[in-house]
Length: 173
Image (cartoon, rainbow, N blue to C red; front, side, top):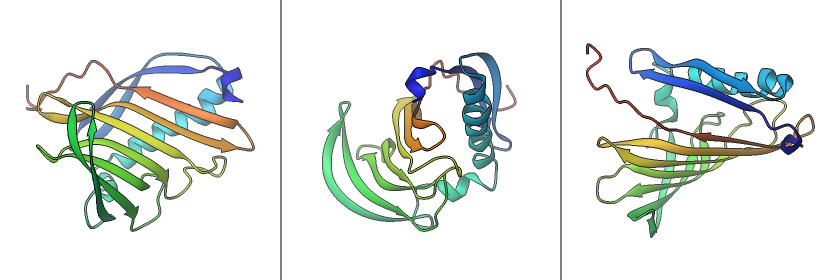
């Protein structure tokens, strides 16, 4: 059970549209095995799926998802339309679940569901959630959580808190 092996990795993340995501390790602690076979591959996969040419395959649009409108709900002070989403192709970076879209500006407020394909041979079904907030006029992730059960690791929960955003809109600055 992962709760017996608390593991932490702190990284600085940079994103450039023409490059994708890069991570700079700030600190890590805990189980070397979980860091090596759990967190490092997770970040490597996150980097790969956000590279130009790959990131578009997970966008919430009609090319990647079948969408059905549902209820209107309040979420963190925002009025949102909840849409049921089903991935058109099965991949670890697409979900079958729901998205909450702020009806005032059509930005993402929350994503919740099950990965349409397991991210690895060692992971079982992976339940994911990501919350967003408006930062400098852009919907930015503030919190994410993924849970799975596997024979190798047992119950595993990964939590990511996104903080200290510094948006640089002009890459030449």
